[in-house]
Image 1 (cartoon, rainbow, N blue to C red):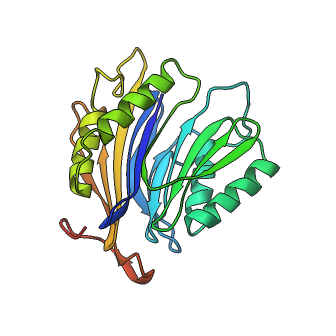
Image 2: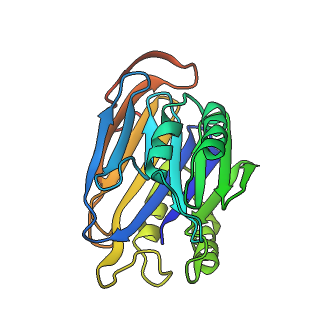
Length: 248
């Protein structure tokens, strides 16, 4: 059961801060975040079994993340490839429109999909019918719908992130990392052949994008700088490059 939290338009210097755990079979092959493409450039990890990704961000400041919905739906195409499609759409509104077209034309298993940039944020739910929710500014949490204790986990994570909410994006990132590594709230999982495989914390700031990645359960795996893009995101101008620590 995956966990995804996003603080949207909460912090002036960082309109999008997203934090997510990927829970998956321990033997499923994947690779850490890397940059692909040119227009846009996409920074995302890869699912080497089915293709695509579960989370990623672009040099234009579009963040996309997915959690599953347990249902009877069978998907002929990987949800990870749908995340790829959304990331390459340009912005959150265009990504929403692309997903709407995709689910009309191809079969997908159930999902919750978060799309967010500085201007817009959406939560799309697919269970055979698509619902689209335009998110208000605030902290939003999605888990694997239909999994045991999914709603309880969602509420525990949201409470942990919003009670005496940090005043800065840096403070929110620090708290999110601690929450994602928490066992008491059943956020960081350890099972037989299944558990929390990795964790991502993505920041879309006024001066660029940063991606921190833990290539293992975050309770014991340090987050490392996976790169990013330096850019005047609010104005959508300038050439993307690699941001230095402290630029956001």
